[in-house]
Amino acid sequence: MIQKSILLVEDNPDDAELTLRAFRKNNFHNDIYLARDGAEAIEWLSASGDTAGRSSPLPAVVLLDLKLPKVDGLGVLRRIRAEERTRFLPVVILTSSTEDKDLANGYRLGANSYVRKPVDFGEFLKVALHLGLYWLVLNEVPPPRG
Image 1: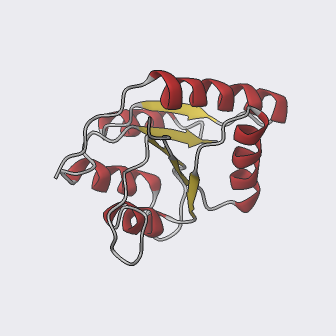
Image 2: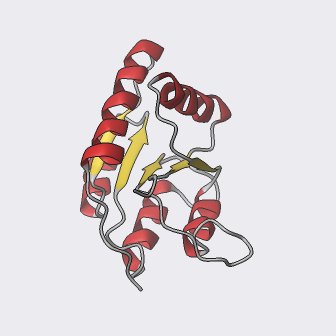
C-alpha cells in the first residue's frame, strides 16, 4: 500500500507549524509537503513536487489556505481544476476566513470541503484528526490522469 501524502498550502509559518504539529500529535506520519504561496503550490503540482521534473505521485489531498501571496487560494483551485492531471485531486480549503463569499466561491470552483481553522489548539487537533482519518484513511484517491 502506498502511503498517501498531503500538500499543505499555507503562507503563515505559525499556522503551518500548528497544522504539522496537529497531524504529528494525532499520529499521522504521512509526508506533508509545504507550499508557502499559491505560485509555489501550482509549481509543485505541475512538477509533481520535484523541481528536477521527476514524476512523483500527486498528494492524496491538498489543504489550501485562501489568503496567499502571489496567487490566492481560489486562483490555485482554478488551476487545479483546469488541469487534466489534477482535475479530480481532492482539495480542502482550510482557512480562517469567515466570509460567506469565500465559502460559496470555494465550492463553486470545485473545492471538496471547506473547513474553518479553529483558534484553540485543542479544537484544531480534533479538526486535524477528522481531516486525516477521512482524507488519508477512508477516502479513495482518484486514479492518476494525464
